[in-house]
Image 1 (cartoon, rainbow, N blue to C red):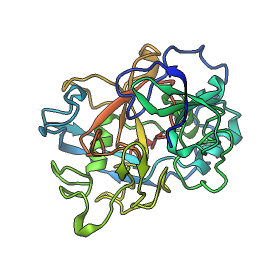
Image 2: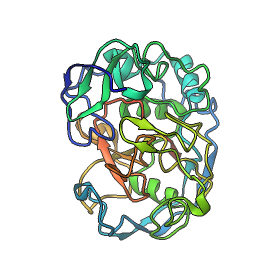
Image 3: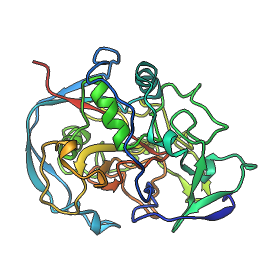
Length: 325
């Protein structure tokens, strides 16, 4: 059911995929010691050689303003990237060791997809133009579907309701970083050249479901033919050619880069401290809410953005690092 409107939350373009908070609260007082948890979490890194690859796409899309094209050659240095998104179990280690308070917890609310709320949930405010998104007080990484939920049985699912700023704090603690957008796409392609998906051009080769997206009639009925209504475990579905899991669907993943709808994008990660706090950041990969009727952003070249303090039930992150010496 579509939960009752209780007013609307103003938001910005792209709200269908992952709505943005409007306005920014004061910077966090919490401090996280850099690289204090460098040995606390095994990220399952995959070593990639880098080199030249063709980034972007010339394919027409629902969202030409996303700036996917033209396809162009980008050259990358070698790097490592985690095989899967940071899980609830991994994120909990960070929280337990640092006492860090996430943006969703500080704000007291986050965005939850309406079908994940129980039928008797109290009235909530809808996102303007995307009423399937609800402003839910008490939703955060520990309570992904609202205060009545928890992550007790979701240890191997991706941590969600994590802002870009939260992800940066995690990276500082773990001695890692977010991937650049170019690194993310190179890794997601898995060695394929200009294929539509991370596994090739056919969505379901041999009838096999390859990712976690919305199936059925969006936004009212999810048939869950892929096995999931919300998030799937970080290691679900077949990996791509480089051994990376869920680079299509499941959760949007933060990248280091500021978002610009332009083909002139640097492949190197920027310095977070050198940019204004409110600059929109790139998210890649699509999520469990992508549906071809309105959003085909689970294609490997697809891109979107969100504000650095924004949190939703379908945004998480994976991490990158320099190559092993």
